[in-house]
Length: 463
Image 1 (cartoon, rainbow, N blue to C red):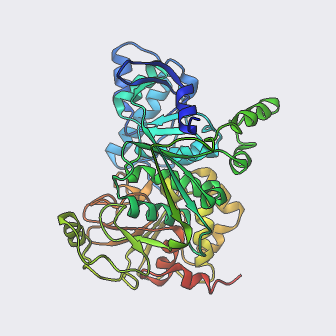
Image 2 (image 1 turned 90 degrees about the vertical axis):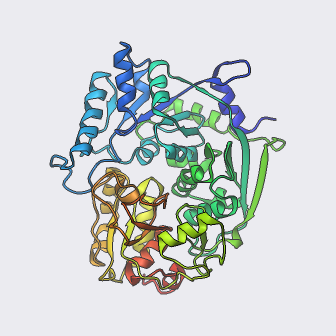
Image 3 (image 1 turned 120 degrees about the vertical axis):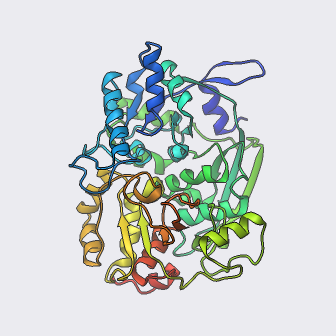
């Protein structure tokens, strides 16, 4: 029997090129301001209109400042990119969620929360972390700018079909271990190239028990293992999350949709090109020590004592030593947010640690919701009051310090504990040093001023 990936992919094949790629129909195209301008220019030069404009949604997120969004953007490059997206969306008659719109945010947060990303879909965007939407039970992957133009013009794309991999995590996660820790653990086991050429289906006890926010985090980080994408078969957790959202089917159409979505699973006899199984009990809160997401350790472990030339180069950049334990290392910045961990559950987790405590005096903390909808929910749940009482400020939505394309840059040499997805050299700013971690671990660092095992603070949380 075919895998779920086969079922979704094959259903969307318009035609197969002999000894070549599939012409794949695309249900949803997301566009942000960085990778779309050349695609629009190409369409304009050829005198083309978007083939199915109602299936394309645009919003700025990479360049948007996370403060004073009601004022003109100060950085001229960022302003030009954001303004250009607005003009292009208007010219090509596409839905556009602009800055300060109640619908704006990071595109990979907004898509699922509005019910735009649904089970069984094919979803693309000119951004590698499009794999996030796979948590909805969709085949979602990043594409290049020329491919964005291809989808605009035809609602199809030429793609080689990836191989299939199933990763199962069985057992029960220990207290203080999150979906982010699971993903960082998988990356350390597979390396950042271990899933190259594959589309990953996640399963097992741990994934079945995960919230949608957790699954979105896990699928978001698939690309950091080299995978083309990652996804989770839709189940009752998925359906409950989708029901009632703005673009979700309603009434009889809802019942019909759920009946179809319930068929979206790999059969018991499905054959994968590769299968891997991991044990939940082996995972503790994780942190990275190097300059790619696969260079990670359990928070109580030590940095490896030896490695190749890249290992040596990474430690030199991070100013760490082989065999060093990182617990107790002074932290300069803490970032909560990004398409990896900018959802309401992440803010709840962060608040659970800092409640009744105070931000460390020497730490600069940027808490950035993934969307205006998340920002509203933070206020509705009173999390803003908890965070403000502990000395934290909530900023306006955007990609923020995930990448150095807006004002939120970590200064050279400073050490950041970040809930984002990449820790490459200069990713958060020229010379910035980044440790990837979960919201719980980030919160622990924010209140202690040093890298801290969040489980030590969870034991002392006040109700």
